[in-house]
Length: 292
Ligand SMILES: Cc1cc2nc3c(=O)[nH]c(=O)nc-3n(C[C@H](O)[C@H](O)[C@H](O)COP(=O)(O)OP(=O)(O)OC[C@H]3O[C@@H](n4cnc5c(N)ncnc54)[C@H](O)[C@@H]3O)c2cc1C
Image (cartoon, rainbow, N blue to C red; front, side):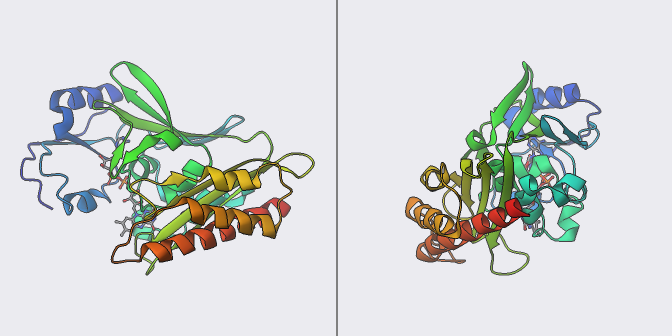
């Protein structure tokens, strides 16, 4: 891996040490967590300016907590640990995370962190959109304290996000829903080690009468420079008693709301059609989970 300007590898023992290093090096510093995406960034020529790598693994941010308000996932907690959390394995509300964690290879899951997967801001990743459909909130720290960024406002472009220079992510919070809720994630890929051609994550909340009170429909993997929330598809679901027919209508609406890219993996037309199929299937999966 070529980092022609690299001068220092810094391993701070606390958050202040990270902030000092970020202040000293400004945009010439790069946070490193699991390191699994550094090659992906380097091979796109995005690290030629980097003079300092700041390893955040000694900060004690590898916790996974569940409380009455929801989940608190430390930025350096590993995918491998997340997938063994009993709630992730069993709770229909968190089904989208369980589904998304099926895809990364085991070697990646043993090194990749929650913070790295979100902060990388790659529109083809799977795990971040599962957090997005659950209204995840990025908690980041900077010199003036802590700041919350809702995941739906976090991604601002290809490999770009709403964190400012001098800030880094310390936690992802996922609020516990107040009603019955289920989520699901689906992906189309060319092979088991590939980035998504198209992925979709959905959540449905239902009230006591079984009517959908809220919904999230998120698509990623080539629908744009960032994953996108498909509000029109959500509106097809809200205030309805959910049936396979309603799920199919939401899928159709999702297809009509995206304007995907064409690349060597798939054409825009194929991605559009797969948006319909994956949103429909993910909603059916979430519906099945609600009924269990
Ligand atoms: C072979 C392979 C297969 C993969 N398959 C999948 C898949 O199927 N599904 C999927 O979703 N993903 C997949 N991925 C992507 C993987 O999820 C990411 O590489 C991983 O989550 C990044 O986490 P990391 O801790 O290694 O981050 P790093 O590589 O350490 O960092 C990635 C980026 O995030 C920044 N960063 C990291 N932590 C922070 C922080 N706390 N605050 C601010 N910035 C930070 C870094 O500066 C860097 O820009 C795959 C990757 C590989 C290499």
